[in-house]
Image (cartoon, rainbow over the protein chains, first blue to last red):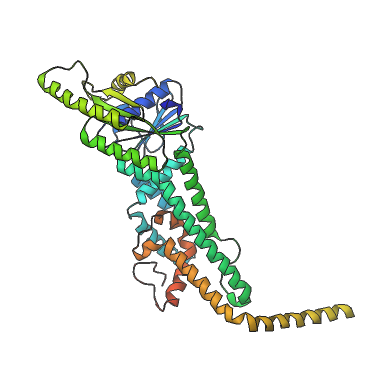
Length: 316
Length: 94
């Protein structure tokens, strides 16, 4: 029951058709009367292309019950930086503002900044599942990226815990120092520690995200692959990684399976090769639900073509 | 009235006695506690902002918002470490 979950992630090697399958599920969900949001992080705008709609960074309704959006990681990172700067302007001594801003601009271009900003946006969207939207489907970037993204809460929360522990120790020692030094303690800051408060707030958000992505009643990860060697291997590795982080796997889709009806010697030989791969897929992913989607005569573009894919989906 | 003056005198004496006591017993620990406090503070700075020193920091993006709180401490740190000006690559606080 894939569509029973509030949040679905679609992932797979580049070019296997995850955008198409994510869009097909979104369409099916909307046609069943569920308020659905389809989120794409693909910079090539392929989701907008399939839905024949102009999408932006905020949800836009493209059909009844179906909204879609395209997140641009670079834009998200810029917005986050702006937000931090605005907050900083309130609390920083004026002589240091320009220096702090310079440092923040450096951080903007470090690797991981866009990923972190993207993750930030994902978590905020996930919090809307069950509220503004009944179902949220994420069409994610190629696999390696997504896996890192989903493992972030786990890793970040534990790193934050380390920092929080350190900070508590600093504060305890500060209190001790003030007690023995009296007025000589001078600038040692007293009272509530804004640094500790900010760290704890962060950790709480990471932990909420971690709870969400590992809740099998609410979330499922859907893999899309094709019956070829490399995509199978990559999917296999990804399945193991997600398992390690406790992220529930909903189904594995095998896309572009040659239909029975195709003829000709060339295709016949391809199908023989393919059937070996299909056997391998069934065997490798036997503990998961595996669905086959046929190869279509034309590529999927526009709502009519998408409806043909929906018709090929198993009973969800 | 009389009683109150007596009490106030007594309190002054008690406080003086406490300060003498602290001077004798606590003074040796004071500098120790202070050093420990500063060391821990520096360590926190290092862990939270290791990216400034070139070491990877997985949460660098999320500790950005702490900059204003910690830039002053960074300044104190480089002074204490005997660097008159901020080292290259980090905050240019001076």
